[in-house]
Amino acid sequence: MSSPEHKKLIWNLIKDIKVGMLVTKTTETDESLRARPMSLVQDAYDGTLFFYTSKSDAKAFEIANDTDTCLTFSNPKDNVYVSLSGKGNITKDKELIDKYWNPFVAAWFENGKEDPDLAMLEIKIHKGEHWDSKNNKLVQLFEIAKSNLKPSETPDLGENEKFGTK
View 1: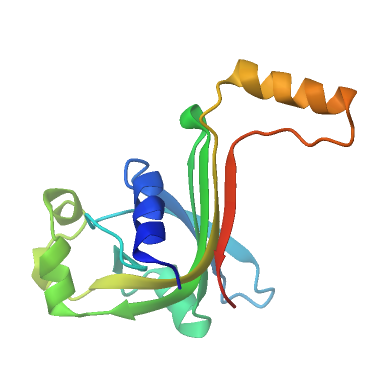
View 2 (view 1 turned 180 degrees about the horizontal axis):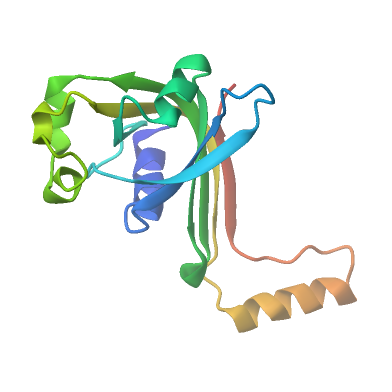
């Protein structure tokens, strides 16, 4: 859905944030949205993100019911914000489990890689948006004040880009 250069840009924006908020539609009758933190486990991004999960966790049932997901990453200190939408899938792929296994993950699964409840959440990203402002707060305030004096001009608060389809 995006070029290798763009995938690298997205990875550079999210890799140090490490934890994103995963949004799924609940399986409750009202089909409300629910978000929860998820930790990145990979060391590169090619259009798919991976996370460890329990097969018995609510998110696994929610994704089985509706594969649409949204992941958000935010670093307010550096004014970086990323929203990624994609299709989720729960897999027991042994190669994936072995590839990304680490001591942090091991702490959550008592029986290690052989835990019968262990699974991977794979999210294939198909669209998103990111905001990245290198400007400090003073420059941002100046831009906002300037646009209030000249309503025909919008403030330049940094880079914003939408990508993908669907």
